[in-house]
Length: 319
Image (tube, rainbow, N blue to C red; front, side, top):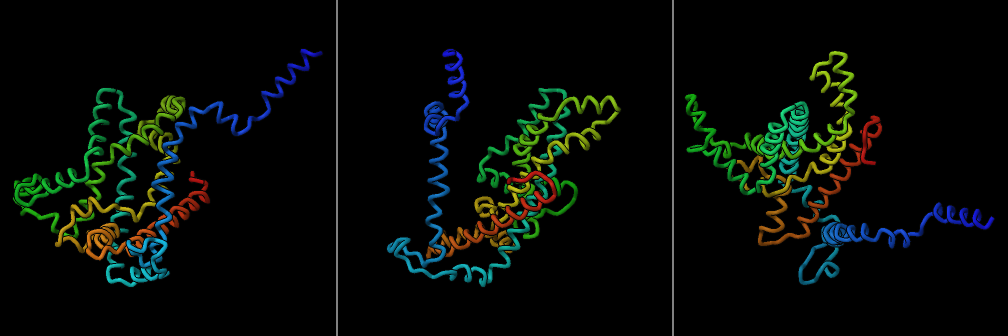
């Protein structure tokens, strides 16, 4: 009886959930690994939110954040009423949606193609060649673009002249700027984006392909009816995440490609913020912070909207 009671007590003790501190002491190594990521998120993601209030103040470095005068939505209204607002929004949205649309099919096509390659050496070589440009710095990448499109000695214009056509100064043409930006970015990142879809394709049940082959399905039909539905959740998640960053182009590449001749189509929100917030002598920190806060709110609204659309359509969603 005592043995039975002791065994029941031991089983009950094992079934009872451990307290939080006991779980931490038991798996303390895993929690130690979490310290640095959590510290990074707190210091560089959450703590800077405290400074976002300067968007509603006339910030002065001498007075500090708390001592600066509260002005409400003054800087937001200034941005909405500025002469540059329409052009900045238009240029940013055109380049963002152009990048979003062009960036969806090519990584998928590349991943589907590599998934059916039997020669492993060739497959690994193509993967290495396609994702290597992702690790090239933006400064070097823009230098390569400018060299290729140089009107005198650039490879592109040399090819055009060999066919009897006139050389084109692509960087000086405003109408070419968005295409140069998008397709050079696609070339740089298509291989790296392909890795996500290859990982998703690796999880497809091989028995589905075996059954399709037995039924006489071609590779194209297998891609269409097996592979694409299998990676559709990943595609939707990436689309939702990218939609949330539709106004975040970054200023580095645009600024390096920008000149006085193409400024009409190359001036975007990020380059404008850099110029008025950091590059100008006025140092309009409050104004630039207000613009960035506006971008963040729009990104959050788009993220929630697209996620809800995906959820109502019975598709994969973030939450």
